[in-house]
Length: 227
Image: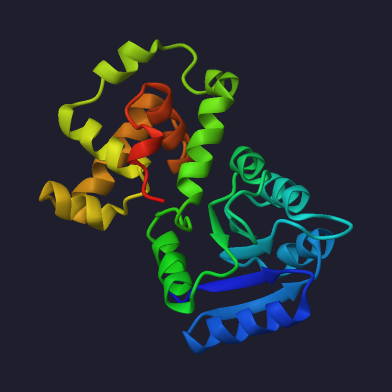
């Protein structure tokens, strides 16, 4: 099935350029919106698979729109667009359920590739943003309490096999399932199976929570993240 997206940005020139870029790569742009309020209204009508949305917009910004859209239409995957990997709103976007975070200067080939990865349950992250998210999670350790509160960290870790821990570490570093499979000499499908079991055993919901969990138990250090 062909991917279809909706674009949300308050800069018409940027949005038109992005629309042209996506359409030339065979991606359907179902519609556009200039702010968060319009995005919510159009999302109800258009029901896109993916929304590419700027974080900083007047009137109703990306974070508010993300929260409203995910509450009403949780199946829509929303990828936030940011001008800087140091944007302080990235951590808030994690909590509200964003499916990815891309810099606006991402080149066309990488952008299309990352959106394709999203279709395969990967999380599109521009280089450096995974490390930013990891640091924010580590500094805000109080947020970890909502993940698997009824189990101790040691019990959680012991519930995983050695192979699952290897997969967990690689995924938390931002490595794709395909790359993890090549490194571990297993198929991409097997990596996805292990990730499914990891999420089930640790009572996690998505890759963002996997990153947070890996940081919490010390499985991944900031210095190991590729920036």
